[in-house]
Length: 167
Image (cartoon, rainbow, N blue to C red; front, side):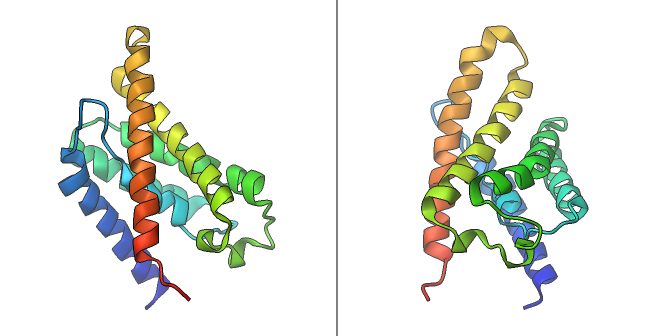
């Protein structure tokens, strides 16, 4: 299947999954998974960051539209898409020559875990900071970030385990 069609279908799948299913989960007031950020993790690595930034912004804006959250998802998703390359260089030691051959599934679990947890924490911290936007709610921001990160990462690694082909 053409890679652009595959990415478009993945984009739509994550958007619909987030809007229809995951936005309706609010367990104990703290746990709300945001699995749509997986798009940023799995987007192919290229020297030109503009397509990733554009698609991430559109994905976040679409989630904002259906969630009525006023651009918070768009900003937090755009931010992790922007800093993703820095963390790929830090955790995976990749150079621009390695970009065409880089696939997250080919890397060791420890590196992938560190990469995904870092970007997930940054995304959630930004999102919940803007959603609560008060120093009085700092404990709520940290609790929401912690529990939502854990649940999002569990769903990501469970989905990765279920949907990857054994070779």
